[in-house]
Length: 459
Image 1 (spheres, helix red, strand yellow):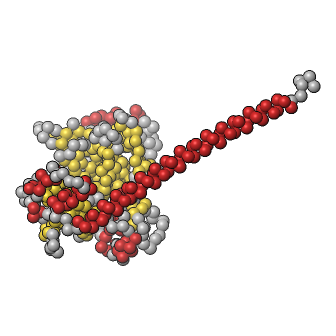
Image 2 (cartoon, one colour):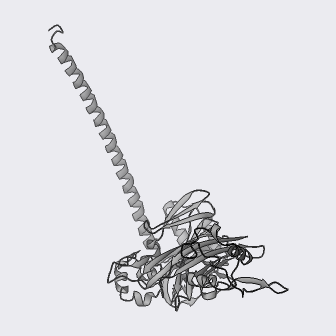
Image 3 (spheres, helix red, strand yellow):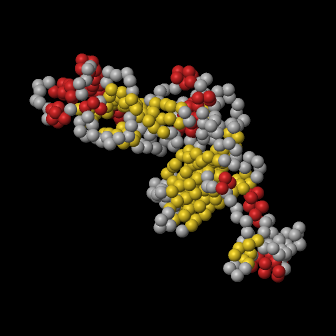
């Protein structure tokens, strides 16, 4: 099966371009692609020779004869022969069009290849719309591609050396509907900055840009390479060409944070919370564990380093039988006691490296695991945590004791405050009931007094 979707846009050179989304499904191949065509190339082919079958083998050759007037394929108008409709065209034009329905020269996409190719995926392209976005270093085509599984791909075409050598960058992959369904219609509103989507389940909308998801640092915003977004000095926000700011940073073509954010690095370190996440993971010897780490950017590569306890050196973790690196993190199949230590996850993109995660892994001995599962009877039940910390050879048991005592005192104080507050609420309710009772008695006394002083009805 074959499905097509078209979208017209205006390029920076003020020439029309055509984006074609193609999905092909066969028994041996399943994939989708997006091709970009120039309207100038399409016009040139349609003004060229017609395809004609000639010879005993009926091979396709250029038609060498005379082409009737008006040229077949030309829209009827007063300029070309004064025809108001195709019904008024001469018979030789109609006959020629029936015998020559195709042009001889093919139309190739820009760069002679698709700009986006997706194979071996669980979805296929169904719809495409294109938005022209003005950025700091030029104008870019941002494509929103709908799929038959309810997903929307946000892709930008970035020129490498020229506008005829394009690079496809996947910015986001979003799920729009709760259930997998084919997106059958897409409309883009530049005024509302919204994308409207239709399917059998209903209609949905989504914003064209979500700059806040790209992080809280200049480097992360620059590496996103989203033409809608720029670093404004404090956060990653919407880019407006008319707003001139000294601290604004954006580099869509290169995505180089080293040159864009080097002068703001000291400012970011003072005003931005560190994005490095520190975690402590406990695992049992001879079992497996998974250290999750996934970068925000779709194009970043992750690297893992390991640092042993009481050792300042870090060593790279290479793929082997026990260590499996995935897009979501690091899998350690069989844990040893020597695997205890610090694991650092780093993301590398365009020569820029940043630390995303720092995990402290504590491997528990299998011999001591039974003591944790079946604790011994103890008169002081508050010291249960000491048995657990002794399994991982924790060096600061005294400080932990102090911390736990503070937690218990805080809990007792909170319980006393809660009981005192409950007593105050009950006392307040009792006072309100007494006051209401006194008001009712006063009302009854006033009614009896007025009845004695009231004059006869006849008067």
